[in-house]
Each structure stands twice: as structure tokens, then as C-alpha cells.
Length: 456
Ligand code: C5P
Ligand code: C5P
Image 1: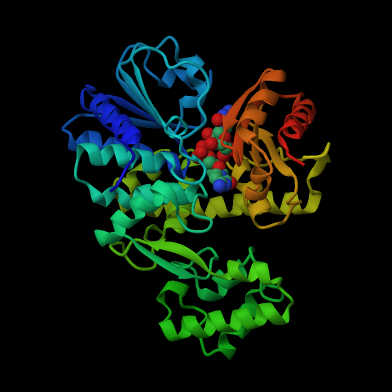
Image 2: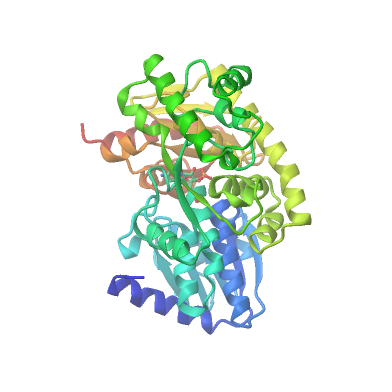
């Protein structure tokens, strides 16, 4: 793999720092990118003959800081860069491997490897799982970790129009090794495990009038094409897939889909051919959702067991969690669609949902803005209760807003600080915790901060 000199230097420094750690504690983030990157680091340390421990947390904040040993070796993965001031008391030696925007000074004793400091776009070119794999390949020969690297990136929504940048280089390495396949096809969710009739009814972007949301209409549509509606999309013979894609294009033209949306009917997706057919772990998108279902519902141990290869008990537990996760997301989305999001100023819309879990509010608003269920020209804020005193905020933008100047990471951090909270993240997606009772004020400050960023 061709890498720039500066990145090569940073990779070998980080690899060296990991090589000398004695029995470190890996502390990672509990979403799909977090559990995949944490597992890559954990597995690499094991292959080096060390005896690592691993734990996943929702966010590094004063409430979870005790998970980082003040005296002892550690690796912080997918978190830490945005909270450097919190870590001034730790002695290390430790390593931070993260793709979030850094804030503060790196304490002595810590090796800091961050996507931004390498000039990389942390919401498109590389996620923490990719960074972890790049470091891993400096230390061990373990291409079997590539599916985890790809799944983390897909979980962080980095594969919108196909993986790019370093993500793409990792993908190419996986394709060459026969561990990953990149294919083109319909972009909807569930291509590996759902009956194609269900897969089609999930169509959100583009929305397919007459088909989206209607299982019976989808079944009829498929039967007319002589396609078995109970087969998953990925298991259909290629002649069926061609007929289906052609018919959907015709349907889209007849129902007046704008030509620029037409190209969204095809996207690149990733398959892990060594996994059993019709299981979630075979498709990067479904795998990421399975991991989120565990991690974001406080069973991160199950997510990590699956990343480390368990396809037995952990996988069975995960399937149960997935069914619950889907119900929780559905409930959150219906509440949002019914109530609507409240416009704040010129750039923000707010959805406060006391019933939605703090760990999934980001997924709910991400699906809503991605599926165009809410205003696409405003940032969406989701707020849920974290504990008696605090609210968890998630913020999501769009690529178009980022192009006109939006940087949610700095805007959220700034607005949170003005109400006594903390926050950060990426240009397109960020989060914060703020004291209860100051939500409206936070939303107004955020609107002002975004106003200063926008170029129009
Ligand atoms: O902590 P972390 O970096 O993993 O959070 C990333 C979140 O950002 C994902 O959950 C995803 O919803 C969101 N995201 C997005 N669009 C992007 C990149 C990330 O919505 N292009
Ligand atoms: O939790 P959520 O998925 O909304 O997080 C979006 C992004 O914001 C993630 O990258 C997350 O790590 C980051 N974040 C942060 N500080 C917080 C909350 C979230 O940097 N207090």
C-alpha cells in the first residue's frame, strides 16, 4: 500500500508505542466503529503475545473517566482526542488512536495518532477502524482484520458513494486477499438477510412511490417480474437482479423521480465471502447495524465477541438485540415523523425525545435526515435524557451543508461550552452532553455558531 511519508512516520511511531506496552487496557467507543477498531487493536496486541483487556464506553467524559487507569498502560480507541484536557492526570504510557477532531494538549506519556493531524478527512477518508488496521499491519500480518476495518467505516457512514481515500486502499488490499468483495447494486438495507420484498419496502433514498413502506405492493411488483419475493437480494440469480434493476428504473421514471436522484438507485456495497450466506456478518452495512444494536444497547461485550470471531452464542444474543434495536429505532422515527422537528433560528431543527435512549438518538436523527424525513437544509439536533441531570445531544448535517461551510464539531463544542456542557465530533456529525433545562439555549447558540460558518 502506497502511503505518504508523514503518515508512514506516524504509523511506525504508534506501532512502536503499542509494541512496548505491557498488558494494556483498551478503552473504546461503543458504536460500530468503536467496537471494530477496539477489537482490531485488542487482537493485534494478543497476536504480539500481550494480555490486553478491553472495555467500551459511551463517551469519554467526567462520568466515565475512571475507566482510564491513572497509573497503568492503556490504549484509547475512537475517543480521547476531543477530550485531551480531561487526561492531564494520567501517567501512561498510553496511546490514543482516534479520528475525532482534537481539542487541547497531548499530555506527556501519551502517543497521539489522529486522522486530523495527518490531514485526513475523518468523516470520509478514514474512520478509527481504518486507522487501527493501518497500525495493526505495521505490527502483524493479519488481513483477516480487514472486514472489521471496512465495517467500522461503513458504520460511520463513510461509504455514501463508495469508499474513498485510505478506506479505499484498505478495501483494495482486502479484495486482493479475497477477503472482501465490492459490488454494485440497489442501495437499500438488508440485502444479505431480508427477503427481497422487505428489502425493497425499506427504500428510503431514493424514496419509491407506491413501493416504499408497502410489503404487499413490493411482493406484487416482484411476482410480476417472476422473482421469488422471499429470497434475499444477494442470493438472487444475476438475471433476476438485472430484471429488477431495469424495472425499478422504469418505475422511477414513471413516478417522476428526478433524474439526479436516479443515480442513487445504484451504490457500491461490501461482502465478506468467508462468512456464511444470509447472516448479517457477511454484509458490511448489516454487520455494522448488528454491532450498533449490541453496543448502543449496553451489550458491548457481545459486539466485541462477534468482532473477535464468535458466531455462536454471541451471534445468537446479538440477533435478539437487533430485533429490539429495530423496534427502538422505529419508535423514535415514528415519534419524530408525528411530532416533527422544531425549527430554531435559521439553521437548526430540534427533536427532543424523552422516550428515546441516549445511545440511539444519533441513529434516529441520522436516519431521518438521510432518508429525507426532515428538512434537509437545516442541521438536525436530537436530544434524549442521559441521566437525571444531563441531556445527550446528537447533531447531524448533510454533505451539502458541509460544502457551504458547516463544521458541526466546532459549532457543537462552542455551543455546549456556553451552557456548561461538552461536545465535539466531525464536520457532518457531532454530539454533546448538556445540563437539563438548557436545551433551547444550546440550540440557539448552535444556530448562531453555524450562522458564522455558512458561506452564503
Ligand atoms: O463517534 P463517531 O465518529 O463514531 O460517530 C460517527 C457518527 O457520525 C455515526 O454514527 C454516523 O451517524 C455519523 N456520520 C454521518 N455521516 C458521515 C459520517 C458520520 O452521519 N458522513
Ligand atoms: O453520539 P453521536 O453518535 O451523536 O456522536 C456523534 C459524534 O460526536 C461522534 O463522533 C461522537 O464521538 C462525537 N461526540 C463528542 N463528544 C460528545 C458526544 C459525541 O465528541 N460529548
